[in-house]
Picture 1 (cartoon, rainbow, N blue to C red):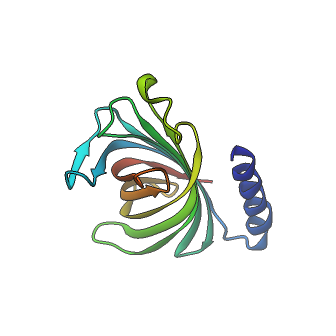
Picture 2 (cartoon, rainbow, N blue to C red; picture 1 turned 135 degrees about the vertical axis):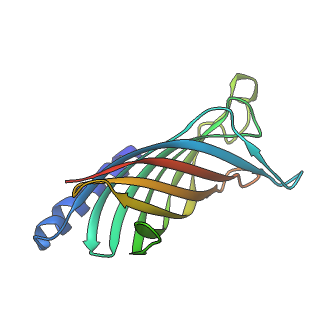
Length: 175
């Protein structure tokens, strides 16, 4: 999966960036919290650990960014469990209330990491297809720096189709 992500990033960076001088690359980091949707009790269960995310993006035009997104999402319904994801998606920007609002969506691989007592489960450590949908707003701090605030919904094809709601704040830097 890492190899696929690196190949996609290399193709995007080498193929799109030289095509127009206005292309801009983005690097970002974010942290926040996540909730797991528990279908049995129809409740959102907040995780105890912090959710982390990174992004590498290439501007497709002034209103769209092709994003390679990596996340580590702690699961609220199983103590010590995490969902790692690497996804390729597109962010669409439009005028927001105080900054640039965005809608994002993408597909990728998600890996379920279970705590020691549950490692015998068939999905432990396996990568499965998943997707994410998100909304947020980016606020200009300087010409090249943005404060990012995003809420995303991630879902994978693991047993029970885990669904995660995540709220993160971070920084993105234009290259």
